[in-house]
Image 1: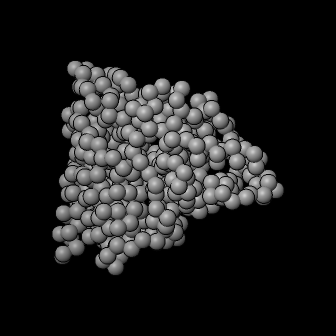
Image 2: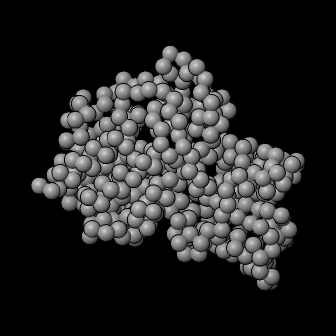
Length: 429
């Protein structure tokens, strides 16, 4: 059996043109998907022999796991809810409600990847567009601190570089691609221009470009420590001003280096200045399939995109205080609910040590370092394969997921919803 127009929820591209082949109750092929997408479909679409719930490593029923997890959260002084970047918006909404009822903090993977982009957005605004506009209009593509050839394999071929668009009928021949990075990555092979800057000098380069775009003089000696010459910067500024429609895609090479949100603010301000001369937009290269969705859900539910605290009964936002690495590093959280994430394998050692000291409840579709360490672990179905729902593409466009396979495992939304109901009961007592 073949199912058309299936959505791949692995990365932020959220490609919705996948043709999936189902044979014998499992996925055997995913046409049009990239290597990462095919691996996601084939591995997550395979039957799992893990129990639906485990308590202290021993198999348990779903009801037993729900009761134990609810008592753990209800009895915690300062619980933390983390992850949510690879699940549906419907599950994310339930998680926000659970954080409010339990009086703890809720954070997502944004705080350790594109959090600086969110802070810059709040400070100066984000001049952005959709990927459809990029495909149909953009004749200049700039990747800054990003390696899409490895992180988002279909980004270039489906949205930004090679596809023929309404106003770019020649496709690749009608576009100029610029890659800015501290080293030559596989993406450089697809670029017309590669600008190699020195590590930690992104802010200086962006600020110099903005000055040139605004007609200011930039002294050659002031940019000599960036790794680029004044002539290269001037040529880049001129190219950006002369394009018909440009888009700057920023990656973690910009957000997770010296400067952080000052870097992204400088990028946003550069694009704002460019719009006095031409049409230009900016878009963060979001990683996980629905990390953009959790930012949107948190923002419309609480007013803030990540690191939200409910300990006083209303939402508060303060990166560096209510974000996951800081909460765990200061040993403040005394219980944790981890949904569709693997912090034990990705967070700093100090934060991981704290997770080993407190009760952890983990929801995931497969075995991970976090589920192995968790006191209570639930094996859930995969959003986009076993259950439907909503995810947001990296350009903030909501996409509806299609169910492909049946599953006897509960969804993240179901488990979190039951935890929410039971915690409410225990809190009322």
